[in-house]
Image (cartoon, rainbow, N blue to C red; front, top):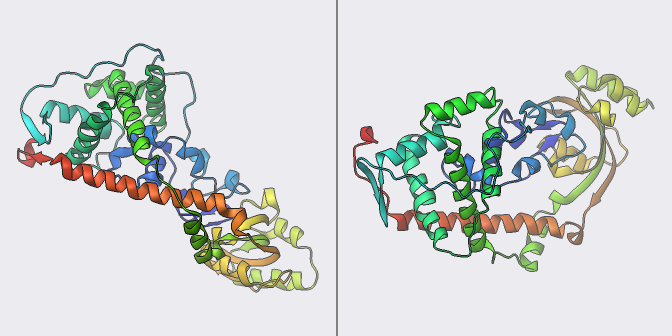
Length: 375
């Protein structure tokens, strides 16, 4: 769903704190996954979302005052985990009491504890994910679906890439919840884990990614579906060039309106009065923006205001705006076809992914065979 913006302000995804790219990435793309521990899975299967999440408005993204990229610092230093082509570490042999059964196998408490520590405690997600809810997630993804993936001999894992991805996982946690790489590694050790566990998890994610991609590769969208979507959402593709001045009080907005209607220069008044942080870069002018990308009240104004006319004050949650629309263009279906295709294809894939996950839950027949207190 397109996030609505007003200059640098974000109403949807970007208004999150942004302290952790891994967390934002998961929240942005959680789709069919019901568990917050899918953050690690999203880093592998849904790679690249961090770069796309804030692409709605390139004119203002660099000055965003809410949910800026700078608020979550990524570690881009050298590898924490040595990168090599050595074989992926073998899975350990778990022992002790069996706490969960599923179609095709069982899980010892030692395995469940290890995986919960790795996928939930280590990234600091205990408040979002209980051990009981983790059971279904883990069994469906890392036992049942991973088992299906491992039966496909065409699915291969590159050990070098697996270690690189494991580094990415670890680096995403530096800054929050861990101050340094040493802090993260110390926590990993205190949980009875090692970097080999991260490498193994990364390799499993690669197998799952390839498996899902094979299941989804036949997803298509017809021209008729795209044309129908365009007809129903035509207003989403109204492109505008608009000037605005944002102030906090109605009286000041009315004063600026009066000055503009007497012939004052819009750019000069924007530079002098506007409280939009982006004004230093764009002088109050947004060029070739989708009207639908703005917050609703502002969007309605730019969709209907006569070209070149100075508006009365328009109130939004950010304050009062004086607006002038310089240009308004309805983009044709041909111009936005590729965008619509990608959007609908994502919906089709999401639906198919949900179906795969639901079918796996039913087929896995997950059963906890001990009291919750013994998990």
